[in-house]
Length: 443
Image (cartoon, rainbow, N blue to C red; front, side, top):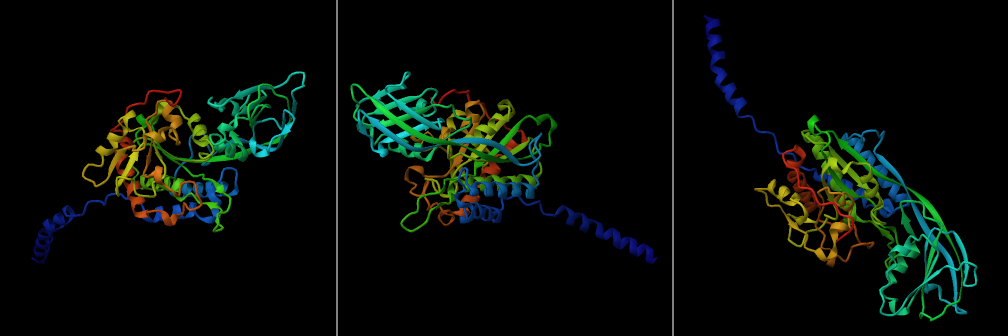
């Protein structure tokens, strides 16, 4: 009798147990870690990173920090690689003292610029093979682009009416020019002077060519669908900035680059952590932190050469997301929005949320070709930059005042969360953005 009563009691509990199982709450929606966002952006923009300059100690320190983050998260190196650092070499041509005597008059050194890989030169107009002389008269355009990486020794005399036009170029050249290949042993000397009808000259100069070891930091999460193993999705940002600058009146000389682009690099780390925890990506996900963006986009160019562009279905390049966009909170813009359906696909996955992606509101800035998405975009990949920066009015851009304290970390985290949610269709293989027609120039 006791056994029958016990059996009855047990049977009576079964519906309650079944109901309890049915009432088990659904798993929480995955979220981007606000703690990770705060910790990483503060680390990258700290003074001890010294502005993460190309060829400077702070840049190397930032790369080591990011490689440790990728290891902590559990990313894997790219196939064939033993670690997360993708090494390459840049060459910096740094001009030294240059003396120019033009028609018997010594030219002020402030009016002289030099580019190229010739480490020493002594030119005179009486040489058996004098250098080519190019004149840029008043009213003519000073088209000097091809002469900044010369293939022949050239003297360029630019009329002083172009002084303001060439001010930026002068500053750029005096800081040294970068190239991905060792420069050829030629030089271009540019002189601002009244263009004479005939010219005699004596020019002497020295320069140095410095190899700079650089490193992208790249890791991946393999896809769970073997059929999509060659359908890579890239999440990227550049970790370099300007390094140490001339001190301001307040004494600050560190260009911390909190928004540009510690914010975007932080997003890459936070997204890697997010997708690792979800562990349900059908396509392989590649997470890249690029070096040398500020000196010419060399890191992303090198990275792009390591991939078959036909095996990249999309690139999320993240650049300066630390402040509210002009559209207000919970918004960001996508460069090149009209060039593929990338933006429309992302927005479709945000249905029901408060967040929205907008087309680039600054087309005159040509932002689509000014960031690390450009190389892959030119190769046909739907590679777009996501940003919130109000760049025409951003007074902190490329200054020592681009500090973490100027960022809105809550809004920044919301942007990263929106990127994560909007990427679900592409990551799962359910969405594939249209390709961009391959280009050979910026037109």
